[in-house]
Image (cartoon, rainbow, N blue to C red; front, side, top):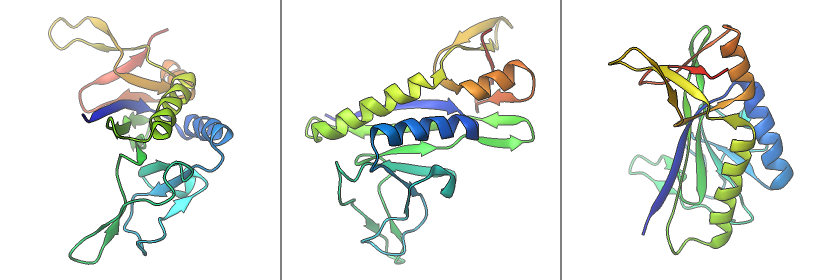
Length: 180
């Protein structure tokens, strides 16, 4: 049976750096794969730093999955996995100056998935939780009241800047505010 885990995230570069540092402390062999067409089916575009990647990244632990499956398309373009043997990281982005749009982490596995991969996913979520909060709120469209919103994780730096009014936090559904 397939299982998935995903969470929307609001992270500034400083938040990403703290998370990446903790990931690499716990899993030194982890690499970040840029979601661009691969130049070779044998060599993923893997980097030691998230900052070398674009907006969609795969977190890859080559100790657990030394070789990744690839998709060679009819036009010759080569792509790696989005989830499964990797965890997808869609990075938050500044859509306009001072407005941070939510990104996402996503993972999937099944009963037959290597327990080491399931453990890796679990540890990544613990790291994310350590460096973020889910204490957000938004305006209810019907009542106009401020209500708690727990489906998102916000980085500590993003939260501080949102509280001070330096940035606004948004998702496709609504604007978000950290609880103070």
